[in-house]
Image (tube, rainbow, N blue to C red; front, side):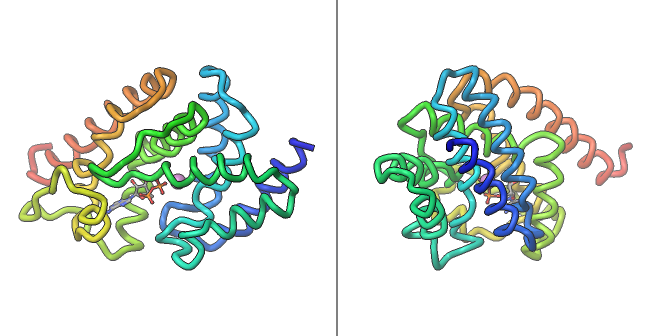
Length: 214
Ligand code: ADP
Ligand code: NI
């Protein structure tokens, strides 16, 4: 029965994200699902909760579905339809509520299951894939790639982080280079180190090319 819900959840997110070009496509959710399961196995977390929360973590995202964000209507509707207990639904909703990066207002999840899902979501914003997603998101939100006159803002709270207009290169300083030290599990921290090194060399190369050095 657990297997069937997971298969249905994969189908559900495939339908939900079929027309997303902002870096939140179905494959983002699928990668988070697989990475969260990998971390959960290392960390002895409840695999079923982690898999379901990972699959549903973006269906009621405030940017993608503002009308269902507050009550997580899509996630709750899916889980109720599959007769998941109210206690499990609450656990999953709490995990989804804690997952997002919100600058200095970011939350470290209470449960090991929440830690696995948050780490997996954040790892997907890092490394080669993170670089691709940052520019895809920037383009789809009319952000320019880089402007040397616009300096990155640091220590933004959640509200400032959401409303701040910036460039895609600044996003590395404003979020992506902070993620490694925010990992909850040692399994994810190791993967984050490699991905951060890769992003740092990319940005260094980018800025040298910009300055005509390379
Ligand atoms: P998630 O909901 O998966 O935690 P976000 O919604 O914050 O992540 O962002 C989705 C993707 O777009 C991530 O890879 C993120 O780093 C990137 N992104 C978010 N905000 C910006 C931005 N202002 N500029 C460039 N990329 C961004
Ligand atoms: Ni996500």
